[in-house]
Length: 159
View 1 (cartoon, helix red, strand yellow):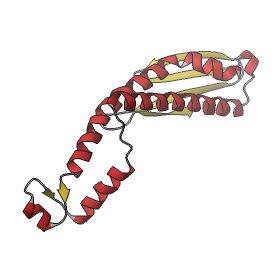
View 2 (cartoon, one colour):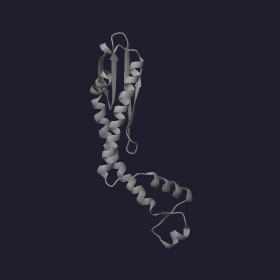
View 3 (cartoon, helix red, strand yellow):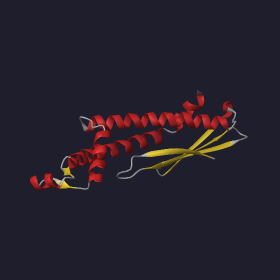
View 4 (cartoon, helix red, strand yellow):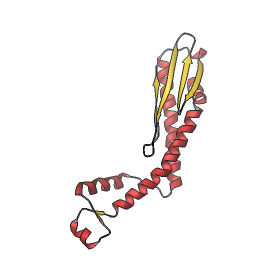
C-alpha cells in the first residue's frame, strides 16, 4: 500500500520519539514493579502474623487482596533489558498498527491517491501532517501523552 509507505516515511520522527519515551518509561516501570512486588511480600492483614513478625506491614484485607491480585496478574521479566526490549517491540507494533488505521481513515475521505502531497510539521512532541490531492485536504495530527508513571501513548486525530 503506497499510502502506508508514505505515511511511514513522513512519521519517522514520531516513531523515534514514541519508542524512546516508551523505553525511558519501561526502565523506571521495571523498578516500580519490583519495589511493589517486594512491598507486597512484606504485607499481611492478620494481626497475629504482624505480632509474630515485626517486619511485616499490617494492611486491610481489601488492600492485601488488591495487591495480591496485582502481583498475580503482573508478568515479571528476568531482567530490566528484557522488559525494556519487550515494551519497545510493543511500541513499534502499536506505531505500525496506528499507521495502517490512519491510512484506512484517509482512504475513506476519498482523496485521489495518485496526486497526494504531504506536509509534515513537528509541534513539540506531536506531529501534524497535511495531506492533499489538490481538491481535498485532510489534516492528521497526533496527541502524545506520557508522564513519570504514565506509559507513553498517542492517538491520531483527523480533520
